[in-house]
Image (tube, rainbow, N blue to C red; front, side, top):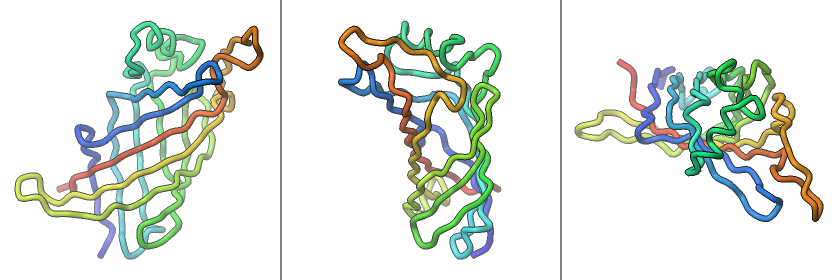
Length: 176
């Protein structure tokens, strides 16, 4: 196979995150407006690359008040920095497990991150055409991107952990 171009089908994909709240539970969120493309060569993954752009104001944690706070300068500062982007710089691995290294930009800060990616395979759907699927995961320290808001709890600990887990599910259509 050669390098093939794909468009992420956001209706069948998701970019979500999990962060520990009050040190006793985890809050889950997702971004509802985003897009991305990638090129993938199953036989030569190292030639593959991906680019994704998310609208941070589309954050959805199922709590309107919390989502509003996340859009402020305490967290995403959505008016000044409306997008979070990821652009790969290298892909390593084989078969169905890859390390995708890339530049993640959030709040104007760019840091290299490593995504652990599982290739789920490809299928040809009679109405939707050729499809591929991937699952990805990484963890970041939000302070590395200038997101440092927190509150110290009376009993010890903090309101929001620094570690943020990011989970990605992608289904893509072959670009024409």
